Image (tube, rainbow, N blue to C red; front, top):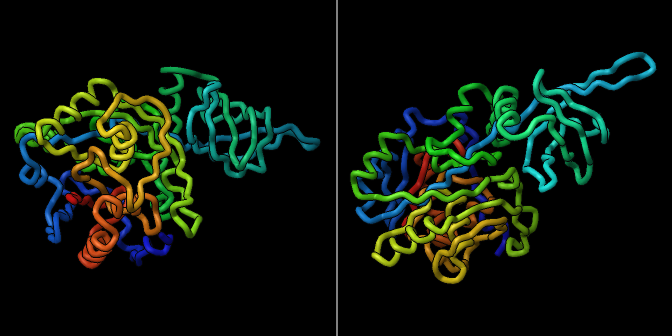
Length: 348
């Protein structure tokens, strides 16, 4: 299985830099059997069936992109350098792993000031990253970060425009609850309160799980034999009640439909025994063609990057040749791609 098997040509004009408004006005490609239908996300309330269960990732994206200064005493007086930091994940010792730009301008032990309230000491530099210890913790840290930070837009959007205040709303799901992600579960961005109410009235039920999406989700696959690729680990939790709800839906003959690849990866991690078990901890599950799905009946997801692990995941669910046809249709029909782009409902 070669990396080139998952490549396709994508015009830059199809990369979305802003979401649809309202959220549920985004286009929806429905792929079922050999058929492809062009719909709109709000149509999910008509397409889905009573007894279907949507699995929703309730992670909350933190404003992880920070701009600050480092001041160092020199023979000519204080020297100040501007430093950009992108938080990646919290460490067990209370520090945060972060990407620093330019990394060469910081040293271990130095302080970086991000605002009047928020600063961090560089505890360690290794492997192209730094570990930062902030001066605040808990709710005080969250509040100061919300003031000083910007949303960590994916590289393919950040290359086209800078983040702004609107992204703090746009790049967050309406049910976000547990802070810790540095990337959004983007298929969930299409849902608004009105659509959720219509789905509930239809008899569709919801289960919340948590997977804190890490920056590693954007890392490219660098090996030609994709089966040798090593996935980044992300922390997730499926509670006992969430597992019971999903198993009850399966037992009743309903469909379990994760909203987004993050929710899918988590519930399939928790279902390796054949049914969903409570789960808490890191998962580095890598899903590519040949994977045995134990719980997923369909998937709502956005359109993914060429040669990405997410494209491999949807190919595992639908079949590689089928997904090539789906993506060819999406490109030819002008669907908007990636995090702020349009959606698909994939029914194998």
